[in-house]
Image (cartoon, rainbow, N blue to C red; front, side, top):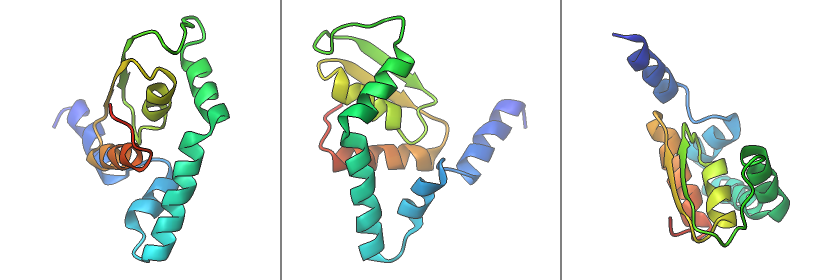
Length: 118
């Protein structure tokens, strides 16, 4: 097995990152899971959270949020940045890619929870 496959296997075994997301995905108690999902949704919709992610990733390339871009978030993990990009650059095409299936699953759930259409 070459190193690429070892890294992918490691991410699939030990993901999603960070640990909060493991709590959300693995929580058996429905009430707790709903509460965790509520907190995640609240965090992902905060304007300051979105602004910080955009500023940290596009500090040299600041365009108006209504301009159309094509953004690839390679190694998107649980999709926090991808979701923030989609909310800020709302006219743009956003694609998130990650080696971890469970991280992508959570990213898709996050997208659905806040009704994004990317």
